[in-house]
Image 1 (tube, helix red, strand yellow):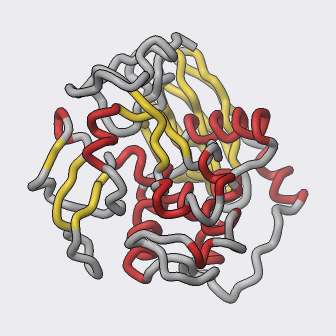
Image 2 (tube, one colour):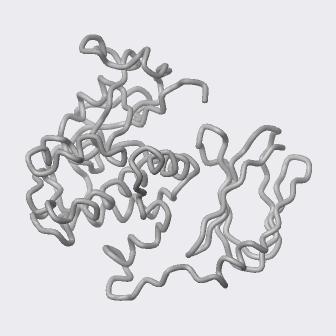
Length: 282
């Protein structure tokens, strides 16, 4: 809403939409220009699927310098001995995650789940041509699509970084523009049924009973805290308007979420079938 760009590779930028977009020059220092990053590099797929070039579930705004450092290196985890962006937000170096020892790029923890769910989306949406895709992360087949170490990495990132209000809002916006959704944002548990610990188990779509149970949740505010009353077990996440996680709790019955200060917050309540989001003013 403020016209600023949500840079996913750097936390020191203050880019204004369009004004600071890369036009071919600049970007020699961090925070100078932003451009559009294919999280799944274009060089891995351009001969097999031109559609992915503009797919908004693969294209994200990033700092131009940091993006250039990433290049087409695979994602991974590293100590960052080759390069670290300002404040160590993103890193480039030898992979420290088991199964791969080459050079990798590690995004910040707060976006790892976002990128993991993008990669799961790509393997699903482009399954028919996925065996033709290149890169160090792909396995040359339709399923599971990625190498074993990559699946372990993406599952870890997906599990540790839950869907947040930013992803939910972006999913809605993308649907309006390109008329499809990322199912792993709507139903994060689907990842487990396809690549995780529930393979071979049938996934059942949410039932009306589950929806009714979630609809009975009562939300109230008291001073600088939020009180949630629920008859079903839920996971509760409180974010500020920049998408930063402030508090999280699991529980049932009466759950108290302290906010510490007045302001506008995004509240997300989820169980294994549904997600509820609310804007809260304290």
